[in-house]
Image (cartoon, rainbow, N blue to C red; front, top):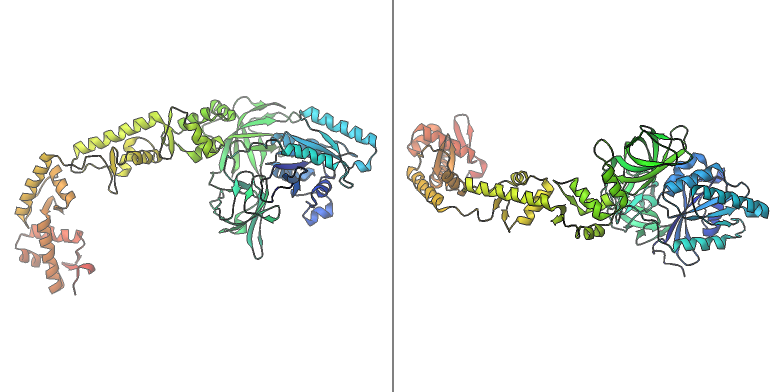
Length: 618
């Protein structure tokens, strides 16, 4: 019984093989789909870009079949098509046998981690039985030489002979576990086409590597674009969801077709593109030694860039060997830990090898062996503490740890529960010792502030972050955790809980000083700043006039009323006129007028003051 169109793809199969060995003909027979979709492909009789078809297997499972180009000149597209596949269908023509591109395609599949599959020996209708037997032996010798176990099925894409047995073998592969994909629950679509359809708009296509995409989802590009998905198609049919492994077309809005190009990646959450990555790099047994400093062409998904090889140890990787290395990229690239890639020489253009991305945020002068080996192990109990130890002052969020470990958010959250040295503070994971020290420093600074300045015991939020000694994100998480428990966080700042209670002796001193200011009226005394005076200014019971003069709120309000009355009746007020009105010296009159300017009540025009607009009554 066939699975529903919207059900998950059970297997993504990549064809491989030499040009004109019958891949497209075989795919057409099995699926009814002609994967040569370009006019030039039909004219020349070879595949230039990957073709895609949906295959219903005998057991009813759905498979996505990718027919990749076989010509040597189109190996780049072969890599793009083979990235993200679960199993291979190696096609070898019985009348030709194993050819150079047969070997290279098999090498590329192995480098990309595609180790399981089957071999279709095609064109058996064109040769005799003896020729078929010799071709089978040729293929088996190739498979044995590279350590790949795969059954060989003689078939004819023209007559269908042997195809049922081949489909049965693919069905068995679909019933086993799929290849583990990097990225956890992050949806990721490497784009191979972007175009505009009349009546629909911008459409992007690719094979979904991870996760799921639904109409209404917002996706992200490395360039900061945020296209929104309006519609989804899987293998040419409308679908409520795109799942990993499916050939996917997305109708998107909020972006122009030219703003998403082949080689871009659409993601369900932002990922910082890498400029250098630490990797496990392997060299094919058939290749030359790969020396430190060599410039190579790196192929990843639908993108290829130049990269400089920096070895962690030694001067070269011998044929058949591997090593930890750093790749410095000429252009940024969206990669995730666990991603597979292929490297080829620039001249001549041949496949050298490839490897696995380990760290996409490579730092320091060279690969950190301990850290990279931990990443290779995939052991979250080992990786998470090391990752957090590398970011002690900021901690890491669950999304960041999921990215570093190439795991799901749920797996990371579960792993942290058993790590005694790691604590969760808000949405940040950090070392318990770091958080303990930060809490002690912060509370100590707030308590010191409360003792030294009881009239103003608050630190600004920025000051509190600095006092904690950790980065802003971890400090903010700590403040949020302590708020209401040990500290009070408000718009004005942060204070230790209970610090807003003024000591009785300070309260008494402030009351005595306020009495003096009220008694002084319009001729306030010159004062040195003190805790009591700061408390009165903070409460609004005293005002600063400049020049060391401080007056009571009552005196200030009376003076401002006098200025407003004079200006509303006469239009303006001069220093001499104001001095006469309040009957005081020039010194105090000048100070009060400057206070009125600072308070926004008046503005100076030449030798007079006029009221600001909001204080005029007529």
